[in-house]
Image 1: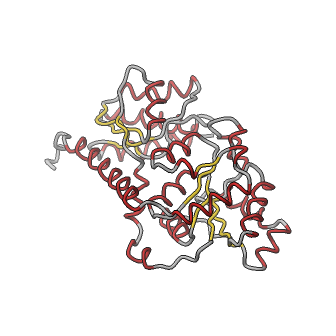
Image 2 (image 1 turned 90 degrees about the vertical axis):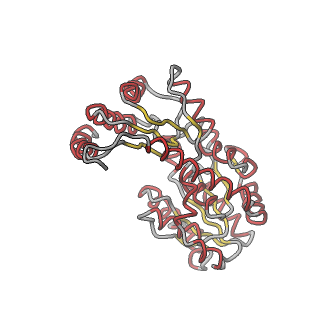
Image 3 (image 1 turned 30 degrees about the vertical axis):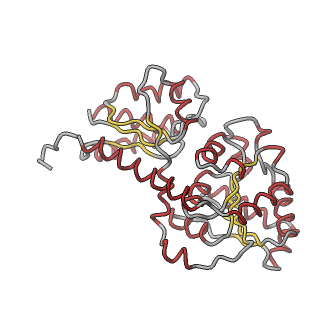
Length: 329
């Protein structure tokens, strides 16, 4: 399915690469193998970079543990490219990178640039805006996606059915919370949220204004706006957790892939992560309340945001030493 589409994209990529001094592949859990999705895309990009002779930087990426032989071959094309910079976003990614590339290159650990979402928001209005207490933003993920793309055992997955979602929502509402469902932008997640709301119990809650569904975000700024509109976030999706942390919105992470737990470890919020059997409705409601009550440490958060900015500076310095372009710039 991807073959012909990637061939067409490669023509456009090659033109852009030819007009560039260097190429940066950055952010996200890009070095993972879900049905060869990213390996095929990145492998094709590496072909374009290699043919151009231009240097490459790999910046603050996530790296999964299990790759198929085909993925190893596709990602392995990196060994035939001039590398200016290699960094991963956390210690889990570092461990997996070294396992896949034991002969090097050895990457730096530079925190996820998504933490700079703070800088993309209107921080002055965010501070002044009064967010209603006890408004929980639940970032909905289709359980099919969780089951299919989980990075660990299915027993580690929290909220892996519509029934479990409904149970958590019911318990939170009984505790006095209002709910705002939202998604990261994936159409299948938004469709699942709509199916949830079609259930009789949740229809009743919706009629009484206990639960609403946000419009599917089309741009990163839309997601930032949604997260800023709630007092606490409950999410599987790593991007929702990263943005919430950057924006000082308390959040609870749900287990399904080691990358989520790894983020909570690196920012010192291990106690607000719940996976598998421990993610009961009662437990999650307790974590939501504690997260909202405790808030996020101002100094530690600003230190992490500063680390993300420093990482960008490190990348810039490595790119800065490029030779001048042929046009003299």
